[in-house]
Length: 158
Image (cartoon, rainbow, N blue to C red; front, top):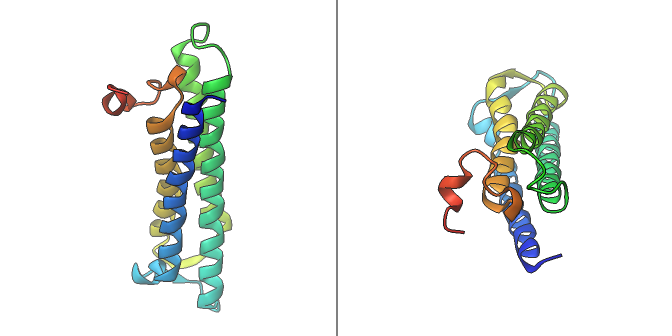
């Protein structure tokens, strides 16, 4: 493994440590209650927060696995000169779709609410997809560093 790969992987893990810290703050300060998300009647607030924390971390874990998978495929997968741009874009979009499905899974299986479900939906869907996008845009291997939409703007001089 090259030195650049080790640095990129450490930066991806650091980015997801920031994601974990955001989840920690959301649970510690009871973000759902602050945003007037009310659990279904009869559900204890502590149970609701525990379920919210669990599903937030599930979405984060799936997002991390897809980001590391994208990196592994880009660095050690098909050769860049024999694989078309369309194939690389499709591989990246599959990772994005997995993150979106993880968000929908958390909405469906996670804590049920009686009001403002859209806030939790936005939280789950945006969290996983945004961090997957950021990690793949900023820390993709050299072979595929310009395959992610918007990467040319940020990585031009790298």
